Each structure stands twice: as structure tokens, then as C-alpha cells.
Image (tube, rainbow, N blue to C red; front, side, top):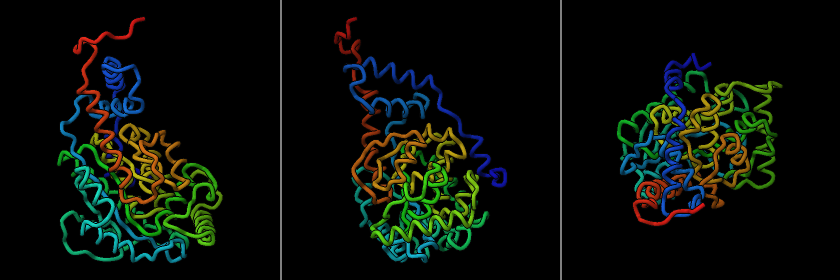
Length: 358
């Protein structure tokens, strides 16, 4: 199906595995530093991955950015969210006025924030930090029809592709990907169930605060949606999953992950929704995982299944389930700390410190 989307095909063709020689070089450097071997724990693996993404030449300083993709979902008509769909637009306004959690963290950690309207059911005036790239005002109700047409999905994928290419041109090299969209844990759970081949109940949580009756209604909606579009098909194509039970912001993030990997940008996934998009990207191109970090582990149960599928170990585990890119931005200082330790610590040789004797 990717051949039907020429821009995506070009991006997929440009994604390559990192060269393992740079992993080995980083490990050698880390082993020579004035510390017990392996004593920095996971920071050493993070540093080695960063070193390999940039082919041994770490940009200094790293330029941080965070993209928040926003869209509404037709599935909210089925009562799957504790909040009305109008909250998506209200939260976008909150982002633009600087009052949300992601604004606080982006300011604190010096990450340029861009809010991307790819499918909000409202129009916004021009504003600093807003990127208006609306494909349509919200996805369709996946319980009744496919969430997107092929053309709409392609347009949303291309939004993410173009934004990652623009980020690379600006020199952004450590980028967090987050989202905002009332109801989006419902399509995310549907996609997760299909990608990881687990029952819907195992991967579906309470979203933004559903009670037990609300969660049961959500489970029923997801099961019926999957049956409507795929019947007994056990392994549908990733893009068909995305088109039928996905969302505009999920598609845009998928395109962003793929294009960022093609541009050799280090990308930090946020929580459940962001990682769903990363999993769709991985299903299209396994090499994309070389460029991905998991910022944290969400409280949404499906997130753990996705992280295992991607082979990613979360940097943080704080019991968060906020979205917006918050967990990803919180992980950025640790990623940069790992690089600084590897590049700025003295070695046993340069410090005149005796190394391990065997």
C-alpha cells in the first residue's frame, strides 16, 4: 500500500539503520571513563544510541523542540470520553496562551514548542507557535465508517513528513512528539490491539477518567469497530489499521517519526498515543526504532505492550497519563546528560587515574 503514497515511499527509502561501529566506539569511550565499568547504567546505552544516530559527531549544543499534534475524533459521539470534544480546541488555546503543563516544561527545558492543528473542530487565528495544517475538522466515527479516507490519511501523514523535514532544516536534533485530542485513547487502543495481537480489554484503560461503565462502553465500541472494518482478518496492513481506526494526529505523528528517522533526528516518544504512532511507523519500517527513545511509561495499559513491541525501555516511570509531550520533554535533560558525561568526563589515561587491574 505504501506505493500509493509516493512521498512516504521516498521517506521509507531514505531510512537506514545506524552503523553499529558507532555503538562500539561509544561503548569503548564509556568504558575508558573515570568510573567503574557500566556504573552509569542506562545512561550509557542512551549515550551510545545518541552517538550512533549522529554518526559519532554530536551536535553542540543540542537543539530541543516539541511538537504537539492536535485533532478531534468522531468516535466521541459514542460516549467513549469523560470530556466533551470541545476540550480539544480549548486546550489548544491554552497551549497558545502558555498555560498548559507542556508550556511550563518546554520553557523550563528550553524546548521550542509547536502546536500543530491537523484536525481540530475549530479554527484558530494566527498565533506564534501554531502551525495550521488542518486536513479536516476531526476524524470520522470509526464505529460507523473508516476514520479517514485514503486521501485524508495520506494528507495527514504528509503533514508529519513535512514538519520533520522543516525541523531538520532548522537544526532541531532532539525532538519530542506529543498530542492533544479528546477521545484519542479509543483509536489508540484499537490500533494497539491489532498491532500487538492482544485482546481489546488487555490494552484499553480509562483514558482521561472514565468510570467502569464508561470503560465497558469504550471496550464495546472498540470491539465493534474492529469487527466492522476487519472482520476475522488476523493481520491487516498497518496503513489500513491507521486509516480505519486511527486519527488525524496519529497519522501525522506516524509521518513525523518516519521522516525524522530519514533526517537522522533523535526523537522522543511521549505516552500511549505518541507510541501508537511510533508502532505504526515501525510496522512500516523497522529501522525507525534506531532513532527512537521512550520518554516514559504511561499508566495506560496498552503502552507497555507497545514498548515491548518496539523494544524500547522507558527512561522515566512517573505514573503519568497526561500526553501533550510532557513525559518526553522531561526525559530530554537525561538524554543530554548522558551525552555530556560521555564526551566531557576524563578517561583513566587523561586523568592519570589507575584503571582496573586484572
